[in-house]
Image (cartoon, rainbow, N blue to C red; front, side, top):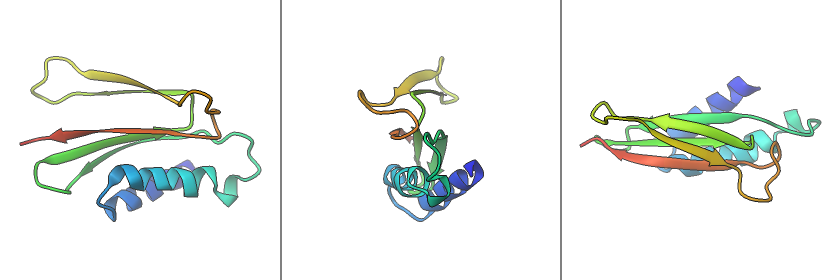
Length: 109
């Protein structure tokens, strides 16, 4: 099932001009609400997507997860240290039943 989540996110971001919205729709409609997982009490998964190609000098890094937290780190070759971010589910959200989704835009020009 998790490989299908990766495939669905890849296909959705490839055919969509807004990677964040595409990943959000996949998590909501095709993962958490999947009929294949309806008997599961908690559905845990995460994705990290790097989307390049909306323009020549832009990259969008998008991540989503159903776990309580997910640590993301990234760095450009010209940076002296990585940027680290701890993504957490919103307050009062239930791990395995809801998701957090965030992203960062990079201009490579």
